[in-house]
Length: 416
Ligand code: S3P
Image 1 (cartoon, rainbow, N blue to C red):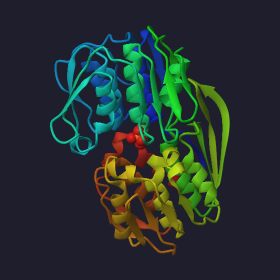
Image 2 (image 1 turned 180 degrees about the vertical axis):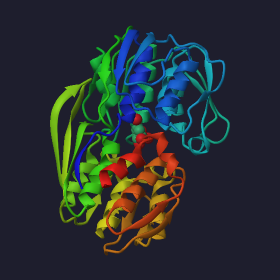
Image 3 (image 1 turned 120 degrees about the horizontal axis):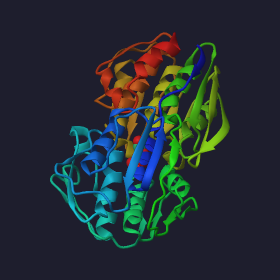
Image 4 (image 1 turned 30 degrees about the vertical axis):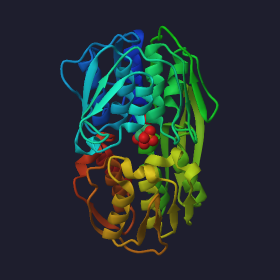
């Protein structure tokens, strides 16, 4: 395997660029937005709230309605499969003087919303969940008050919901986390002129009354790049270069974990745009060995843990992941989905309450896996299927459309 690939735009940055440009005073330009179902969900929700979002193209322009300029929606806000859409937009809506009902697909409806409802309720909004703490959920917005909130964990969605609520209400907010979650919201806000500080465990946003429009170039998604980095490190020969990748250190835990496993993965920072470091990742073949992922390392690799488990199984090396109970409340229960599917193709793996273990031993892996409608499970096993000697079929391959609609095509091209 050899060559160069540029994967599609970053999902987290694409969501935020739509949301923040909608809240700005004036016209923003977004280049290279990710055209995938999750981002379309954010666009649908913003359109329902009165923002004119054009059809996705390489360059789109958005005329913001200003802070607290959104309009009362006429129908429910359909967030599809997207947790980021729901949680970030709940923060924005909580600061507006109207009520909105959030709905989503079966997977999203099972995901916990108490984590955002609690701080936003403390700030003055009201939340009503129709079943447990999931969707459908109605948010009654008000003029919010300031908050100093300790999330007790590490979640960029919770942190961003509080920051966006404070931003739209023009009040100071502080959020403390156990360890730093992805900080794209803070970086983008800073690039738009907002006073927001992040010392690694606490973020403080100071009130602002006007958000300046901005131009942003969305870099390639490191979580999508990770699939090809994984494939190249499992390949028997060749070298692959991923270009234009977002190299924000809160997102590059997978590359670090692969290096601990002995892989040759070089990151080169080449430029910075919108407050984000961007560059290339070069991967060459190497003999892999086992590793462990600990709780402190989890935030920067959270979305790539299923893939890491597949890499370990493909290389026949041991892996232990701990402190990652969050995986149970993602698009699927990713601990159970990974372990069950690894076993279905003949690997040895076991579930732990807060992680998983893959045993060493090189085997030919074969069989059909059920991704449970979860894009990242489908793609992780897609990589394992493309690695030498494995015969794995992914049922429901189309679920990748949530974050990477062209994945199978790109995989065929790179593997060829
Ligand atoms: C995201 C934050 C993470 C991540 C998700 C995207 C974001 O979720 O898993 O894919 O864009 O803020 P948590 O905040 O729940 O950790």
